[in-house]
Image (tube, rainbow, N blue to C red; front, side):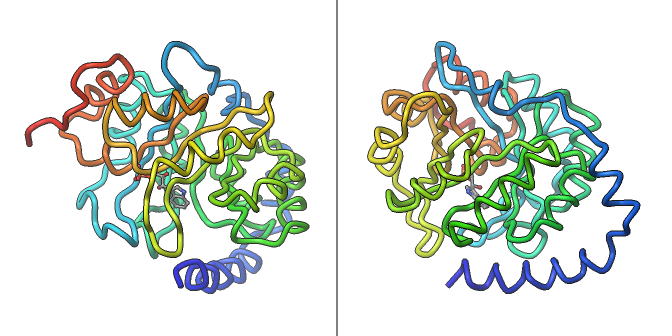
Length: 265
Ligand SMILES: O=P(O)(O)OC[C@@H](O)[C@@H](O)c1c[nH]c2ccccc12
């Protein structure tokens, strides 16, 4: 199962990081601060706020974009009107890279979300050093107490948290960890089935006052409107944007209406 494989892989990375990060690195992370807020960027205007993702590949789709230039992609996202950028830093399954995040943070002025599989605090220190403003935590990946501790440690380091749920049973653990943003993943990380109905079912179960975003499987203006009707403040879009010749125009179309059709390539 995918989550088990990824957990195994991440445990190895955690061992490496624990050896590599020096006491100086850890002190530097403690002193860093961020002034770009993902949660504040999720305020609802006419259409939901858009988090645009730099996603070179995925386990369900294989390679999405062969030659990725994370900086020009993120710049195009910003120019098109995205409210935040998400950067996959996992190399093994998503062909991302930690350095992509560092470079994107330097070159765009939007809040930057680190998309990876975090199960140990040392990955939060690394995220802070890379310049992440927020990190993804996946409720299905860790026990309830561990989720709380990771979220607490993230906050201590000045990182916001996007806590992701896919099943109603995970919502309580997510809320107890006091996330800055809740993400409802429309994709099941075991079967990779993706269904926008997941956001429609779970969104009413989340109390007011915390920004909610719908994640995965958004390919058109109609999809975005559907999630907007389900009450989300934001949406997270990866593959669709990575396949567009002009991600900038694609975002404009998603946010401003139009046909929602993919551009001819
Ligand atoms: O490419 P899509 O279908 O637009 O999905 C983006 C994003 O939601 C997806 O990449 C994602 C959601 N949760 C994750 C957790 C880890 C890695 C990736 C993800």
